[in-house]
Image (cartoon, rainbow, N blue to C red):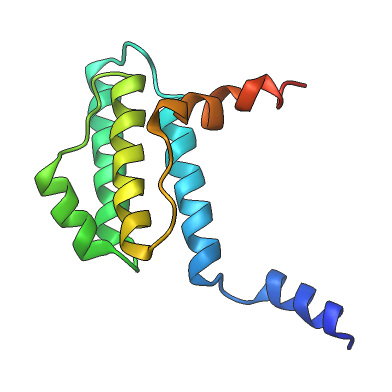
Length: 122
């Protein structure tokens, strides 16, 4: 088995590493927030609050810290803009802790909904 074949096999058959898990989780969360309604029904607000809280409480790497973040600033589910801004702030807290660059939260919809400069339109 070549090195490339081994790498490909591992990607398909081994558990994800911390970096892969982080990217996949943040992608899911930011995408869910970006497509959240501008005027959510009460049931949508409750389900999104439960979704975000559940993931953050059970996340294997930062579960305890996420609980603290939620106590400091509960999930904002009033509308798409509030939820996306809240999530961006939470993500930036994690990035700061990890020594990674933070994201300009004014660009969340460019990144997760429209694409930067609409470059992702098909």
